[in-house]
Image (cartoon, rainbow, N blue to C red):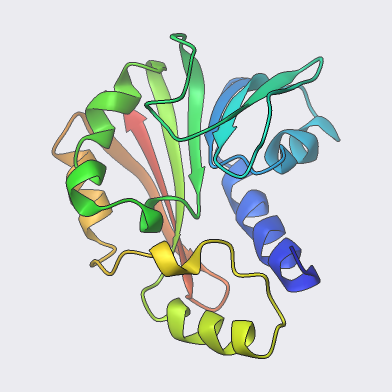
Length: 182
């Protein structure tokens, strides 16, 4: 990743961690554990993550990261206070995305939270320009799905979740959703 990639990732983490409740996290699309490391600087957290960029399992005192795709490659069946999906859902086909509320509920404690960041659909144009000038690495841009972002709210609220927070950040180019499992 390049410096701008890390800056964008850092802002997603900064926004998401404000809404983490409890101290256990399942981080889907965890990269190399940056969310866990960021939280561990000032607090306590434990959990697990999964990402297809990983080549092997990474174990630390506080978290374990698994290579692969969620849910099919995630080997654990345990509950967490939070599930985070930071810049992940735009890579998932809408047909699969519609299954996520039910799938995630199996991994959440009662009143557990799903914390999502997703770029607005206009971000792809900006990212393509930055990628052209080699200013970003542009992780997996070719797999971004073109869908109306508000569908995320509908999918979760009609399937057993309450919307706690919806907000735009980074000049409105990214959207944060926080849902609580009913």
